[in-house]
Length: 470
Image 1: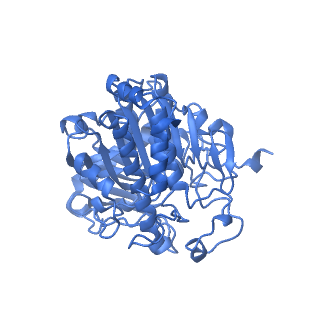
Image 2: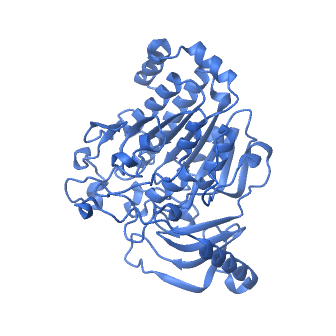
Image 3: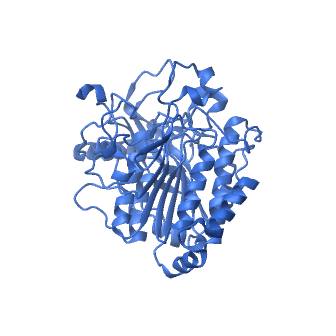
């Protein structure tokens, strides 16, 4: 740990927190409901952690969590790009239901007029009603206007950037220029609650500051609390602080990942110091797969096919860790899970209500986490925009539509019969096998038809621009 970080931690312990350390430790022991910390990275690929097979990126703290907790190897984001993925995690609903995906614009932009509708219930809103204090720290990307900010969706506190760190460009930039970035080319605001406190955001220090804000909230807040820590990195453009720049053999991408890991180590230390580690559930995952056009500045999907923006496995299957000492049964879980399932899992642990007036797409993973039971999720629906492209049921995945991303040959291809892969035998989706398993194809076709027949799509929230309303 750097001397500046050590001083920061010691200053908090010494007296800057609003609650004394013994009080926090007593509160941690007395509450039966756990604290919840979700760490959500941006564009981190399936193969970008040491515990998930990367040979040169050092992630000792995450590796320790994977060993002492559960490493899920078939865990999926709700979508393959930022905005719909985040909407799915926070609402427990496929983003097509809330209108947080679009066939016209993949994500929200600084000129977007809308965001996550107030009719949606977020995890934060649910647990806040159950008595939790809530914080969103990091990238939001669910609407930058006041009605859509985190503080309008159940978060007591917000510190972060409202959309992707490559937006608000002040000039046109080539891929090469974005791989040698200057923070002054990106006029991205840093916000505290509803106020812009820095513009452009100093992205060299943003990962460290997110970790510091998380530690500060932990030490100043009476349990139980819920923190959604959504890192800006490793979305292009990449940045790392002086303590980490040039230290990884994986280059700048490795520097950024290793700084995230170091921040998690500091957070774990803060939990230990406040007596809260054994009453805190930590979930680590990512919003979608690697941004492949940026070559070595993008991540790796490991043995999975393709990356961000696609419905191939590399676009949506994410490195995922659940950690809760003395509570979670250590294991490598190969069953299917999804960020969609965090809503119901957390709601049950927190004693929060689950909405009964809408279709939910969220399962309770607690029996798997705590008793080693099979995951209740047996299927996964892969959307691109508002269209269902693929379905996984059990070991098999059927592609009804495929489309490449960020490439010259990104033409849409429809498949009848669908392409079929056994993603347990063939996670790289190299060996199409529909002709060998006609019954499996027919079964997944029936599942997709039933799903489509019942689907009620929300109004597109991503297409409207601010200029459209003037």
